[in-house]
Image (cartoon, rainbow, N blue to C red):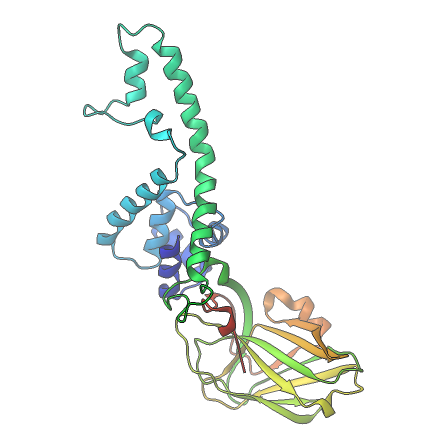
Amino acid sequence: MKLLAEQFARADVSLRELQTRADRVGGTRLPRSTCADMLAGRRFPKKAVMVAFLRGCRVPDHQLPEWERAWERVRVNQLPAGFNENRSVESSHGTPRAAQIMTAPGNPGTTRAAGRRWRQAALLAAVAVPAAAVTLSVVIAQRATPQRGASEGAPDHIVNPAHIVSDDGRAFPRGGSSRFTVTVNPANTGVRLIRRLDAGVGLQHATITVNGTPAAKWRPLLEDSVYKWRDQIVAIPPDLTAGRRSLTIVNTCVSSSGFNEFLYTVEHKVNGVWSTADTVDIGRNHTASEAAHDYRVVGEDWAETQTFAYPPRKEAWSVQ
């Protein structure tokens, strides 16, 4: 499961694109929900689904047999203890061992006993598959989480399926802008704006005004082509927010790389405690949230859904 998540991250495609590629080739389908459950560890994939997923990630065909052998090892190793003794195994002549036992002459009573063992084995197999998916997802999460006291934490190439997020957003080029209005407690002594962005587009730079007054800037971040989600935090000067119930935010792009936005979280500090004041979900699938905050965009040149991963270490999710 971890290796499948790594292939997905390297492929740099959305779940929608994987589904489209599978439909174009024909054969096993790849519904987005199936892929999402598989990457999150909620579902152990069938072998054909795994192969279709890998082909969609552009894994070379000559590597697929090794993936299939790995799938078989994982499937067998996750079966309950004692299952191997009773499961259907082909003999050198290609006849399942259980079938040989049930039909072997000169073995009175073995037919009923073998039948019981066969049914028990089938029941154990049905239980083992979801258990395997849960076990694998736990192992993946443990490996992707920094160990207490470790100086280096999780290896940089690991993708934790729990850190994979699908979200839709919008983007606009230099000179374009977005505008929305949020509510805060007038007793606030501080407000900060948190933006989910696609850091696969590097050096995004924009100015911020609050109620028409220059307030801050979204500083440029270096490109990250593997872990693309980031939550960038900007502090708004307290004198622009104190005593106000609503804030109209305008972001104006000043970089040639453009500016993208997927989700805004507004936090305010009241009585010394930070808490969430408002959220603005951006994108074509969240028009209700956009309308509720009077969201407007000027010069939009992109609006789609992306599926990316956050970095392995949660402290790296948020940046200034």
